[in-house]
Every structure is written in structure tokens, then in C-alpha cells.
Figure (cartoon, rainbow, N blue to C red):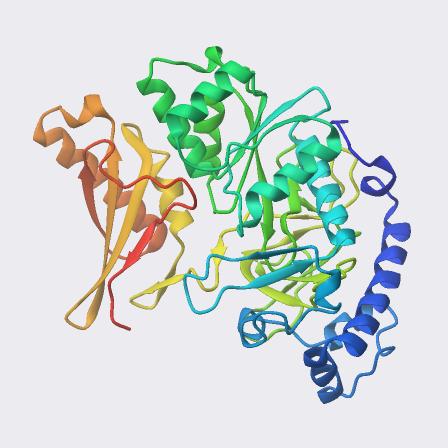
Length: 434
């Protein structure tokens, strides 16, 4: 059994966990009916009252909540407590329209610290750890979310935030950091910068990495573990629900445990909204069970996954979700074919001589969509003869076409020419005027 932070709840028998979920679901529905006008209207439109849901079987009767609902009620319209009880506000980046806002009571911050303490413990963190947090601090939930969990554990926290890569490496080396928390693309950027500085994994004391905020593949995990000498685990969260800590991988790496005493997951058909059985892929929907500041009922995350109900060898009884295959709203439709960037990443990272840096360019040529994949190759290989580069391009092109079933153009580019990001990597540039 791996390290466990809160054995009472993480290893609770399923029948006891379900009883807690049902009690908390009833409390949440009652709360939003009386305290949030948006939900009161939505429930009444369905003929539902504050006590209409008695058990988990009634969940499907409840209305969905979407990101548009959050934006329409910007900034405080979905809060269920007075602003005087909100002790912190976080928000999304707001790259499309108004930002998505979440408000936290002191109770909510305690819940957040608890689920992040569980998540960091999965990654090997203890009170003796030095946790280096390179997520951004501020309105973004990543930095402060990880920070609260690490402090609850009693670990030493290095609140490095994002940017200043050379300084980050110096701090990790000098301070003896043992756990790294950041986006996977930035972790790869740190590994590249270390190599450029003549440092190897043996120069650091890193043992674990907790990476989230963007999709990443199993192949990227392998590269991060090899380059940094760590166990690399995936953590999931979103501003709307609480931030990072909704779900996390344990060292078994067989899916992400959803902390079900706080978050109730379901998977639906994104077209019909009907619940799907465990094991079927669809859109993840989450209901908060303990949030006070801004509880959400059946929030449509747009993330595509499946629920894994089999018990995990780690001893935790909370169900897991599979690592995401994409998002319904990140999905590209190219000539009638659904394309997720993660599918292309899996191909690229299987092929020798390529670097884990790529960009997908989508354009409209005449009446047809065209897909170009730009990928960096290793320094040594890029200096080889043109014929070998052309052979590699054709190899990548064939393998991507085998996966996607559509024609693509592959362009090999020099190392370090694709723009790096200290936050979420921008993998797709869609130039179509749709």
C-alpha cells in the first residue's frame, strides 16, 4: 500500500462512502435551492423542490450547469453565501469572454487543502518533503492550490511560481527540492534547461512530480521520469469545481482517483446528456458535495474520460477516471473526423529523434481543412542529410494518418524553435474562419 494521507476517508467501504455522498448531495441541493436564484429557477422548471433528490439514483433528474451559465452569472451570481463570507476569489484566464469565477469560504479552503494533501501524498510527499511549486500564483488556481495542500502535510514549500527558469533550477538544486508541482510541458522545459546548463537528474533530489492543468501522454510521462528521475503523476482539477485536487493518480498509475466524498462524478453522452455506465467513454460531469461558496450541480467539464469502478491495489476505494483522451470543446473536426491533439502527441513521442515539442496548425485551403504538424527533432539528427529528414517526415506522416485516418502534412523544425510556455502549452493554432 502506498502512502495515504487520510485513511479513514480514502479507504472507506463503498457502502459507507455512498451514504456520505447521498447525505451531502441532499444538503447541496437544498442549499442551492434556497440560496442561489439560478438553481432555484432551474430546479423549479423541472418540477423539483429542495427535497426532491433522496439518493444518488435521483442525480439524473437534476439540471446540468455549463460554463456559459457561469459566465452569464458573472461574477458572483452563483455564490450561495454573502460576499462577507468569501475569503478568496479565483478565476480562469478569461481567454474567451469573461473569466470563470469561483469563490471560497474558509471551509472551502480547508476542503481544498485536504484534497491536495491527499494528492501530494500520492506523489510521495510527507512532512519531510521540500515541495517546489512552479504553477502560477494569483487568480490561477494551480499555485495556491498545491501550496495549501503541501502546508497541511507540513512539508517545506518553495512558492517559486512560474517563469525565471534558470532561477527555478538553481532553487531546486540549492534547496534540495524533492517534489515538483507544475504543468507537464513546463516540467519538460525545466528538463531541457537543466541539460543545457550541464546538469543531470543526479544533481537534484527530486523524487516525485505532480503535473496537471493540461493533457499529456504516457510517452511524455516516460520522458519526464527518465530525464528528472521521478515518479510523474497526473493531477486533475478545474477552477469551476475547486482547482487542482479533484482527482489524482496514485503510484499504480491505473487512472485518477476522484475524491468522491467531496466530488460526485458521472459520465454522460455529450450529445444526449444521458448517463453512461462505468467503462463507457463520455463527458465527465461533476457535482460538488461540500462546497459552500459556489456549489455546482452536474457541471459539464467537457473532458472525455470513463469511470473505472474496479478497486485499486493501492487500497483507496474511491473510483477512478481514465486519463483524458481530449475535450469536447478542444476537439478538432477535420474533414468530418474528430481529432484530439493527444492522439498526435502519442504518435510523435513514440518516434525516435523527435523532441516532445510540437504544434498543430489548422488552415482552410479552398473548401477543405488542412492539418500541418510541426515537430522539433533532436539537434544531432537535424544536422544529418536531407534524405534522412525526409524519411523521418514520411514515417511520422504515415503513423499519424494511420491513427487519424486523414491526410496530414508533417514539417520538421529545428530544436527550440517552437515557442515554450511557462503555463499551459499552446499546441493548436486554428487559422480557419469557421
